[in-house]
Length: 178
Figure 1 (cartoon, rainbow, N blue to C red):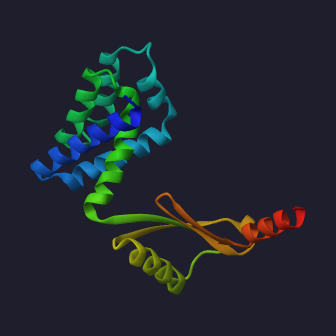
Figure 2: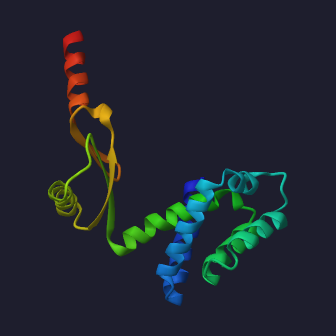
Figure 3: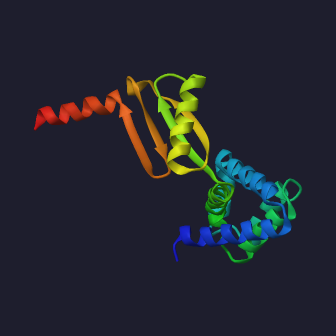
């Protein structure tokens, strides 16, 4: 079974348990904490993914870092995953939980890449475009990339609108070569 499928199943079970115990928001914050900690601390994920480190030791590491910082529901998933010898996919489970939480709450993440920071009017226009297309509340992540020359790249899920000058120039270049 693929890692993505396993992570999806655990995340779905976790969100259902959190919903039942009425701690969805708390567990969401805990999964954000875990994901951010894992990203910032390469050693943590190396230890969790290592076949040499014993499972009891991995649970001890998770206990030392998270036991007093997360809800018991969140910590229970760490214990279950460790008992099932799947600590190596905890980061994927956390990421999948965050994705499912966004879907549960009707939130659509979108990324807008421009050459300059957006002003309020442009930000509202992009929010409206995505909200109209998806029917969801938009959480817009803004990136500035000067290499674009001008225009923008809007990414929503697996769809992308590339209206950058860099893209247009590359298209013209390809047309001239043919």
